[in-house]
Amino acid sequence: DTEVTQTPKHLVMGMTNKKSLKCEQHMGHRAMYWYKQKAKKPPELMFVYSYEKLSINESVPSRFSPECPNSSLLNLHLHALQPEDSALYLCASSQDPPFGGIGSPLHFGNGTRLTVT
Amino acid sequence: AQKVTQAQTEISVVEKEDVTLDCVYETRDTTYYLFWYKQPPSGELVFLIRRNSFDEQNEISGRYSWNFQKSTSSFNFTITASQVVDSAVYFCALSDRTDSWGKLQFGAGTQVVVTP
Image 1 (cartoon, rainbow over the protein chains, first blue to last red):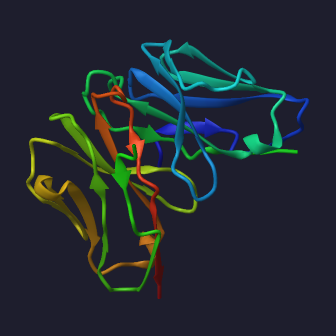
Image 2 (image 1 turned 30 degrees about the horizontal axis):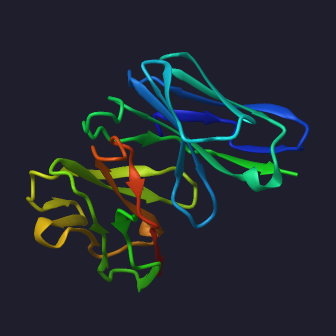
């Protein structure tokens, strides 16, 4: 069983909808991540939170808005998405943030399969 | 510049055959980490192994083994006596401290298909 829990598993939304993806980890990890993965491609980093603060935004469009309410929770708010945003959205956590070359492995959730119609 | 190369797009084997996945990496850093992740059809990426650049010992975990060779910048992964449950996409990844600040850089992935 994965120790990073993501909800919902599947989401279909229209381009005018507002929805949120949720992620939870109880491993005491200090960094949390959002990745986007298109079919047959590796995951692409979107955001990194370190100690509950946004530390990296990989030039993600503003229609994606991350939020870290506490050290265990990570949300991704979606608004006015485009059909090309359809993908698997993966949440991950790591014991330590990635900076400084500590190399903590990432632990991923099962992902949310998002379809934008 | 691409930092992790997985040249094999897809490998198909029959159950009980061995399969080796190649991974070649590129970095200017002297301290770095290499990883392998497995992604079954369910979607979750499962962490398999981490090696740091100072530890070239090969590792075996059950039917899985890894061969790390700094001289050829390779970190290859072998599944011995493959099983249908090994069918998945396998990603090799690198983390270093250069321009990517420790960000995990994935290879393109290798799809392994094991048929009964």
